[in-house]
Each structure stands twice: as structure tokens, then as C-alpha cells.
Amino acid sequence: MKIRNYMLFAALIAALVFANGCSGSGKSESIGHQINDVSVESEASAESKGEVPADVPTEAPTAEPTATPTATPTAEPEQKLYEIPREVNEEAYLKILDVPEGTYTLTADVSGMACYKEGAVYQVTLLKNDGSFEEFDLTEADGKIEINVKDALKAEISPVFRFVFGKRTNTPEPSEINVQAADKYTLENDYGFLGEVETLKNGVHFKGTEPCFIVRVPEGFYNVTLIKAGDSRSLVLIDGEALGCNVGIQGAGGRRGLPPVEYYMEDALASDGTLRLSLGEKDFNPGSLEIRRSSTLKPRKPHLYLAGDSTCSAYYPLESAEPQSGRFQTGWGQVLCHYITDGTAITNLGSGGTCAKTWHDIAFGGVLHHSQPGDYFIIMHGINDQSYSSVEEMKQYLSSMIDECREKGVIPVLCTPMQTAKFWRSDKGKDLSEFEAPLGGGKAAFMKGIREVAKEKGTFLIDVAAITSEQYGILGRTYVAHNYHLYNTGSGKEEDTLHLSYAGAKNVASIIATELYRLQEAGTADSLGKRVTGLTFNPMGPETITYTDKDGNESVFTSDRITGIYRPYAISPFNHVAE
Image 1 (cartoon, one colour):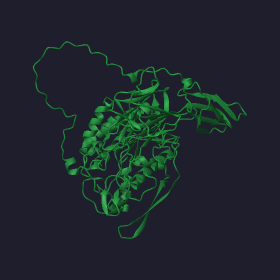
Image 2 (tube, one colour; image 1 turned 90 degrees about the vertical axis):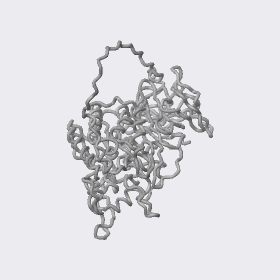
Image 3 (cartoon, helix red, strand yellow; image 1 turned 120 degrees about the vertical axis):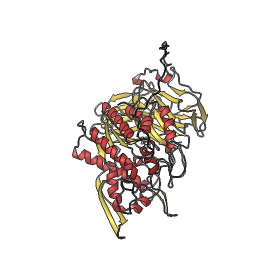
Image 4 (cartoon, rainbow, N blue to C red; image 1 turned 135 degrees about the horizontal axis):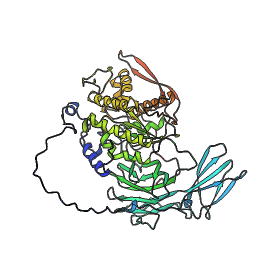
């Protein structure tokens, strides 16, 4: 069953309404992006609602027969300017030069390329004789660039677009294009704004979700870096489809101070001759935008697209060093890159306060639009669904997303949610003792529902709930609450026993990475014969945890996991506007 007939705006409104019901810190934050992002409604209230299922018919009142009205012809909706395809001269945006054998330096004329101006920057990708690639930037001089092509077979050249918006506190660099709110997009120019836009210091303000910034580029994949001018969260959309959720949301547990937030999107798909940036949610203030063509010489990386709630989402400001256990609210999707190498691209679309239905309406279109056959879609829901949905509706939306992904050749992987210290209960809702393995209380029915969908559809399943249940039962509730959730060592207060600390997020991310690795190594196939292939992981190794056991003795818990290596989250690997 297809459910892709929801409008994005309506989805955002629905998510705002849903998330206002979240509790935890006693606040009502839209889409649940703060510490109370995931529902903490009491299980008694959630389980005693007694809603009538949507498929139960109700008796309709009898109406008097009426005459059939005469049909009125409806006018075709007016085509929006950004919907009109643009013709693009591919040669102005991409050059691929063969390198003659024995050549050390190649001079390339870039004066006829798009974005040409004095001081313009060009991205160069070399295909080397040994099959490797080298990528770097060069600045033009007199319309030319000099390329060191030693040991290269081919050289690819493409312009780097660097736009800085609004009134700048510093003079823009020669490679930057300063764009004001009054610079409007038309079919006669190559870039500009559409809709109501205001100029700000070091940025512009989009008045709502309709305004956008459009750049004329050939159809293809692009690496896009957005630096925000605002200090709140944004939904980031490329070509009208999500590629970033909760971008810029400040996390609890010690994450303080919010500098300009940078967000990097790898292999964003531009179509119909343009690339379009728009924003949703609270912060509608872009500061700068860099656009680079993904190299056509290099094979596209396999991509992991992540679906989840606030336990998956990213939080800011980004850490400069690893915090102590129990601090820094973090989503597992934010640290999955610590376990999977940069040979795999990860797009974290975790959005706080969402259940399967509301996440689908906000972000699933981004997965369908930007993904390619052979990519992976990792889905973890089942926490907020208890408050805002039902087991059956959750299963319906999970099944629909699985079907649509498979139609495109994207491989879905279902995950049950992790256990938490907050719901340290049996599957019947009974409170458990310190070292009894938690089963999630009322969440257990949703965990079971996810397992049922995986079995019915024959998809890959990573049973995070079962793995953390066993692990947490050994470590004990106190260890879990003080290390894997938000705990204030100074006051001795358990600040939040639902959301994840940095250590808790890493624990979940390492479980997911390890299970993906095991699926790949075993050659396990899903019901369509698809296998996990092409993902690159850090080495496996023993992970040891020292804890106090149920007898009060110091013990060591050891498990084989993918080892973690720190990588900064969603930061461009290229030179970029850093203002």
C-alpha cells in the first residue's frame, strides 16, 4: 500500500501537534526536539486510550437523495518557476581531460566554464594509473589552472559554487558570490531567490517554507555544504525533499553555546537543470551555501539513510573532545560514522518527536528522491508510536516504506529500539529489579510489531532491543542510567533516563554497525535475495566495560564489536566558507 500522498507542509504541522504532547522535562517543544523529544507519556495512559482502530466502520447517517451536481471544469495549477526545467550546457560545468603519457603538468582553460570570475575555484579529480583518485581545489589565474597530473590517466574539472548570503561582516573572498535578498531567480539568470526573503547580517531569512534559493546546474549528484545564520533547528531540503532533520538543535547534558552550524550533504540529487535549497521548521536563516559536483570519475559510495526519532537525531554544538559518560545528549545516527568508514556515506534523517507515520510524512520523500539502487535504509521506530500511533499503524507505515524502497532497489533494514532505564520493566509493565533484563513495558508490543514486519516482509532485522536487554541486565540499571543516559555527576541527579548520552549513543551505534558487519560477512540474504555488500567498517575487536555486579564486586563485561574511531559529524571534507 502506497502512502506517499501526504503534503510536506501538512506533515510538518502534524508533527508539531504530535510533539507538543511529549513530556519528560515538563515542556512542550514542537516536533519534540528538546530533552523531551521522545514521548514519555505514562504507559497506563497510553495503553488505556482505547481508540477505535481506523479500519472499524461506523454507521453513517441516512441522507435525502440529491440531484447530481454539474461538474465544473477545474483549472490546471499554475506551474511554479522552479518546476520549469532549465537547459544546461554540460561542458560549462564539467571537463574531463585525457592525460598524455609522461605529462607532468596540464594547463586547462576554464574561462568558458560556469561561475567563471577572477579568483574562482575549481575542483579537480585525478584518476591515477593505479586506479586511485586524488581530489583538490585550484584557483584560476588569467582564466587558466595549472594541474599537476603526474601518474594520472584523466583529469576532471568542475566549478565550485560558493554563495554567501546577506550583509557580510567580512569582505567576501574572491571565490565567493555575495547574494542579497533582492537577487531573484528568473529563467534568464543562473541563481537567485524565490519567495519572500529578507537580508540579515551574514545571512538571509526565508519567510516560511515556500522561499528557496535556486542554482542552475546539470542534472546529477552534488556535495552541498550549508552554514546556517540562525541558532535553532532546521529541516533542510534539496529539491523539496529532506536531506537533514534537526539541523542546529542544541542538545542537553552539557552541550552549550551554538556557533554557526555547518551541515554537509553528500550526493544530493539535482534534477531538471537546477538545485534548490529550502528550509523547514523553526530556523529559516541560511548563511552560506557551497555546491560541488560529485566526481563522475569516482564510483558513487554506498549510502546509508537513517530513519528514527530523537534517539537517532543529531545535537549541537558538536563536541571537540569525547565527553565523560552520562553527558552530552547524542543520537546514535550522529555517531554511526565512528564505526563505518568514510567509504560509506551516511545521511542521518532522525527527527525528534516522530513516530513511523510522522517521520514518513516529513522525511521519507528524501530517501526516495536522493537514494540509488543498492543503497540502504535503516529504520528504527517504536518509541513514540505508543503515544501517537498504534502497533498496527506503525506496521502499516513500516511495510509501506519497505515496499517503496524495494521498488527503487534500496535495501531496507529494520531495527527494534534500544531498551532504556526509564522503561526498566517487563513486557507486562512490571517494574524490575536492578539486574533483571528490561523488556520495555508498553514499548514491548511495538518491538514485537517490528519483528513481525521483518518476518512478514523478509527484511533484515537488527534486534537492538534484545541485544541491549541482555547487556543492560548484566550491567544493571544504575550503570545504564549513569552512563548511557543523561546523568549529572555533580548533583547525582538522573537528568533523563530516556534519551541517550554520547556513550549511550555510541553503544547503540556500535551494535548496529557490528550487526551490519556480521550480515555482510555471513552473506545473509533477505527474501528478495539482496545481501549487505560494499559497506566498509573499522576492525572488529573486544570491547570491555568495567561495572559493579549484583554481588557488589567489580566485574568486566566483554563483547566483540566494531571498534570506534572518531569522525566529526556532517562536516565537509572540502575547503569551504567557514564564516
